Each structure stands twice: as C-alpha cells, then as structure tokens.
Image (cartoon, rainbow, N blue to C red; front, side):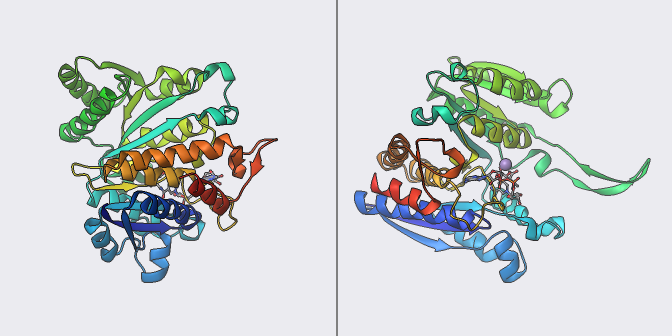
Length: 357
Ligand code: NAD
Ligand code: IPM
Ligand code: MN
C-alpha cells in the first residue's frame, strides 16, 4: 500500500484525451494493488498561454517539483505557432525538462507480436520481434544552446548553437551503459563525429567510460547511417545513446517500425527518482478531439512511471501485459487498424486495457 502524488499536465490537442486514459489505468492499478494515487492537475503549453498568458506558470513548476511523478500528454498546436519563440508551448516542455533536471530520456521501441503486421518493413527484417532502447540526452545540445539573430555576411541571419560539456556527456553515457547492463549489453553511440566537434567529445568520453563497463560492447555510428540502418536492419541495435536532437528524430523513426508513433512511451529521468513520463508523440492537431488517438503510448508512459519513479515492478508489468492482451484480442485504434481487426476509439481502447489489469 503506497501513497503517490502525481502531477498531471494534459496539455493540448490529443494530450488531454490520451492522458485521461492513462489516469483511468492508474486508478484501476491503484484499486487492484492497493495504492492510493492522487492527481494534481497543472497547466502548461498552449492551454496555459490561453488561461494565464504564459506557457509554463510558476505554479505548474511547483506542483511538478513537489509531486512523486509527472505525467504529460503533449503540448503545442497551430493556434500557437505564431507566438514569440520564448513563449511557444514547446518552451514549456523544454523548461520542465531543464528545471526538473531530467537529462536522460528513455524511449523504448518494441514490436508486439500481435502488431507484427503494423510494421511497414518486410516481415523477415523484424522476424522474432524488435526491442531497442533509445537513450536521448534531454537537457543540452542545440535545444539549449545559444540562439538568436545577428547581422551576417548576407544581412540578417539566425543561429542555434550545439554545445555539450564533458559533464553532460558523461552522465548520459553512464546512464546508457547502466541500462545496457540490464539488457543485451550493447551500446551504439550515434553521432556526427565526422563533422561535429561535440560528437568528437562524446566519443572521447565514451572511450573513457567503456573501461568501467568491460562487459558492454560499445560501437559508434554516424547519424545519417543510423537512420538508414534502422530501416535496413533495426535488430542490430540494443541501446542507442545520442544527443538531444538526433534522439528526437531517430525515436520518431523507430516508433513507426513498431507500427505507430501512438505506441511509444518515454521516461525522462535525472539524478533522483523524480521523473516525467510522456508519450513521444505530439498533440496531433489533425486528429484532436475526435476520439481517434491511440492512448497506448500515454498508458505505457504511466507504466514507466510506476517502474522508474515508484519502483512498482509488478504493477508496471500488469499494464504492459494488459496492453499486449488487448492487441492479441485484435483491438485497434485507427493508426494500427488493419482488415479483420476491431476498430476502437481512444476511450474504448483505454477501457479495454483497464479491463485486463
Ligand atoms: P505529432 O506527433 O503530433 O503528429 C504526427 C502524426 O502522428 C500526425 O499525423 C498525428 O495524427 C499522428 N499521431 C501522433 N500521435 C498519435 C497517436 N497517439 N495516435 C494516433 N496518431 C498519432 O507531430 P507534429 O504534427 O509534428 O506536431 C504537432 C504539434 O505537437 C506541434 O505543435 C509540435 O511542436 C507538438 N509536439 C509536442 C510534443 C510533446 O509535447 N511531447 C512532441 C512532438 C510534437
Ligand atoms: C518530443 C518533442 C519535443 C522535442 C518538442 C515538442 C519540443 O518533439 O518530445 O519528442 O523535440 O523534444
Ligand atoms: Mn519529438
């Protein structure tokens, strides 16, 4: 029996729809395993701009900092695409990650047996399943470097700078080696060391750290090749560790190999067990408000919170097993629907998963 206070940022677009299903599942898990999950709602992103004129109100940060875990839907949308950069909904997400010290973003991409057909690659490429973990650096790099406008050779120019310190690189690489020790013990450091100074520093630090993990096999790959290899032979990867921007791009690519971006959860972690849990997808304005979004990524993200922040392993497994069970039953949201399966809406998918807990 545990008491856990969870901060909930529903966000924009499909954010509230998928988050509600994650909460539904957490409530069922709470009942079944005798835990008391309480939810404190907070605003961030476009909905916060509309309600109080700023994308990340102080109160939201306070709620998140004092909670045991944070779940987030998604932020952003066309309505706020023209607000100044410093106040864009996406800035709220970056602010939360940075303020909460969440430098390590775990993005697991797994193919469920029942969804083998949803993978757009030839069956033989992913025969026997796929289980990749992308470890994305989350509070550094070009996302947080110096940026702005200046007078250049051809008039006004814009710039965004990629910066990484040894400290930032070491802690994310260590994290990748640690998680690799629990898996197949293979780490592929994806970078652009043939061009970027920051990537060369990543490799230097990786060469030092690998000595602390003699059982782990470390390899390097340029990001352009990695994007190609993910489609040619994704099974060659176990853990991919990479920078903020490369990790963002490669994880969307990896998600589609598993069938849909609506399936991929993530955990954003720092030095403490405090974490933020969010699907990797965005607010999907094209399907928002239509009960069409796949809530599985959000539900599995809540499952990751149970595991990584609350250390409730069996409860987290119960969520994963319930997801597997509904997929095996042939229940599908539109993004993973195929002939002969049963089409469900967001809410109905959440209910079906809840029934299997
Ligand atoms: P997106 O991930 O929102 O959507 C890309 C495509 O995937 C769309 O066709 C969408 O319908 C589909 N999709 C996404 N999630 C789905 C789900 N759960 N079920 C079914 N289909 C799903 O990316 P985008 O269109 O590039 O961005 C839209 C907005 O979301 C932008 O404002 C962007 O900045 C923001 N965004 C936010 C986050 C976040 O909050 N974590 C992540 C990515 C993008
Ligand atoms: C993600 C998103 C965010 C990112 C955006 C919305 C800032 O794409 O979480 O993957 O790039 O990190
Ligand atoms: Mn992204």
